[in-house]
Length: 75
Picture 1 (cartoon, helix red, strand yellow):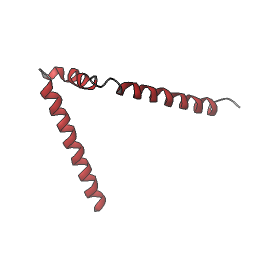
Picture 2 (cartoon, one colour):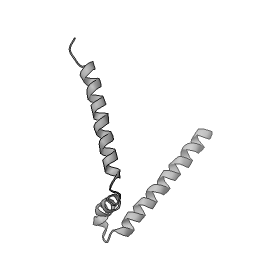
Picture 3 (cartoon, one colour):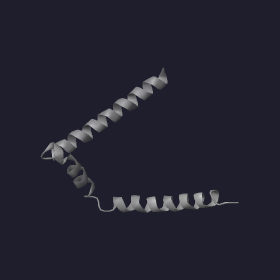
Picture 4 (cartoon, helix red, strand yellow):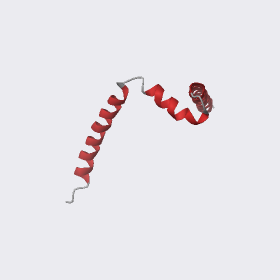
């Protein structure tokens, strides 16, 4: 019973946050078809954030390539 209550509380929180984000993006867009541009505009105001994610992606790809090169090498 406690797990169900916890799940419902987290689910309601996620729905609440997603509704807030969607309403904020819709408020910033002039037309409903410009919602994607509103999302890009709000994310591009922070210049350093995409570079961190990009470098972590490259690092993780190198780790995965190393692992798969070792495990898939013919014996």
